[in-house]
Image (tube, rainbow, N blue to C red; front, top):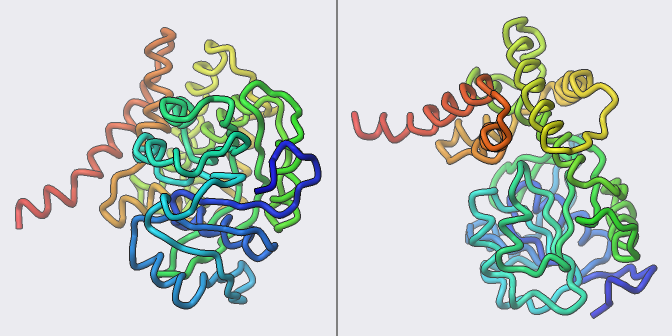
Length: 323
């Protein structure tokens, strides 16, 4: 196994925990670049389809290509890795963390690119913090069916050490991702980067789910824009009180720009609501509410958005009971 600390290491053994849309996208691109990639997913149909016919990726231009990472349902069959990428939904992070021990060697990096706050702390309950790195990604992807995903749009991936140090293993990962076509940069303020992504998510995700619209449609409704702005202002107040430096010159302008650039996207929260799945509202708007309560910052708009999405999560169950 190639040690991550060895500068310039190129070929990595990578295990992706949670081979949904984003996990499959990163795993697929890294596999195409020549890395040994294992996708681990509990959905046996998805894993079986990839094992039989490869992972089919529909690119933003409509072209389709097939890549061939390995796909399994049990991480114990993978063995120690250079990199473990965690892409499960946030409410499965603790369960995923408990399964990582067979994947760890002394030099293994466990990287979370998940949405929301709290994933690092959840992983740290089972994994030594010295193994952990974190970040965010602007890549977009959707699942089209078993073994088939759509690469909906490209964006920068920012990753960093928890303490902000410019390590060799961080440079190695940035190089590996970028060489694979997943443009990446190193950050010395990963907590600020996570909060910057959180501000986008608290504004866009719940409203698209509540209103059942694509991202760009929000900007066409003045009332929605006002709610977005208030949610972001609350998030900024909480981040400021927490001592987090958000690396955005104009956070509200950034949120609007993301909504415009991803105008045709259906947010992950909208997709979850439409499919009757649990959402990640607890680690998005819910995280702002919890941190605000802890720090004495009022967050009424984020609280209302959280409650509304939680009501939406109950609608399939209520409908079933009435039937």
